[in-house]
Image 1: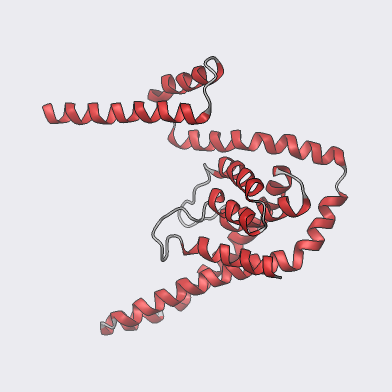
Image 2 (image 1 turned 180 degrees about the vertical axis):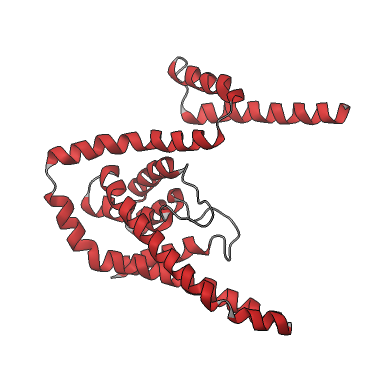
Length: 245
């Protein structure tokens, strides 16, 4: 009960992102999963699972209001069951995907209902009653955060035993297959991201990153620093060229 309540509050905090806290990326899996691990007393596992889910979902974008999966709900629920059952990322992503899709449907339904209720603001706008419109949007945002937090709370409170029993009943061979498949998902996430931002000008940089990783043995932090330095060099050089023109 207490864990479900705390994770509901974590979801509430995540949904405050973009509403009351600016766009701080609190709702991303790397944050939500880590906080879930902290609540459950296993921050290390939460961070590892969260980081892997972030890689898998980093290329997931919302177009024209469509929400393919709710990463906030999915990452919290997935990380919870990964820690609760003692399994790794294979369980997390197995639970996170359907939970994320369910969260997307529930959130879209809430927004659809809200789109009709918001017409009450039309008469306030016509009368110039801006304060009422501001209060309405504030209350609506809080209700959305509370509603999605309630979804996580009920999912964990009512579904924990059933899902844990289901996971424990899965044969070991299938779990190994799920583990192998889950290892491929970060590559899928990178592929989705590259598909969005790919440009032929980046081909040399792509192979530079491959070479320094495969042949020089640099870790991801060192490669990130090298990439950052190259980006800053390009930015400052471009600024100087523009100023000279």
